[in-house]
Image (cartoon, one colour):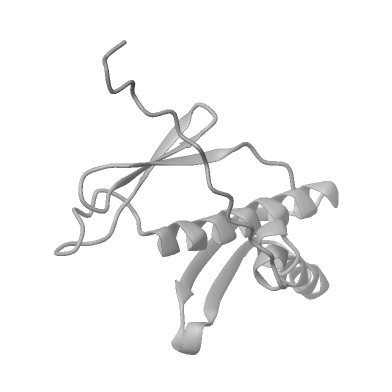
Length: 135
């Protein structure tokens, strides 16, 4: 999975500005603890999973020239920390094609990343401090 560096800058209260290449997103928490200026980090994670699933299914169906007209994905946190992913497929698909598409829904890169053991390494960053003497 290729990716650009994602950098996060602190804003007011819990609001965060997320920069990815030329794109800017906002993350926040709902009121009263945040300002509700964007989705929560957890919602962004669900969005990554849902969009990756939809993209993978579109690419799979197009590669096979299947009559998939529309893909709808709804993702939410369920009980006990589970993630529930509902996948709706619209089109004149054979039952075997639907079955293969639903199987492919579990193989998108973000789904695979979330379902395997992942190591995260936290590295301290040395940020340049402004010169205390104004030089």
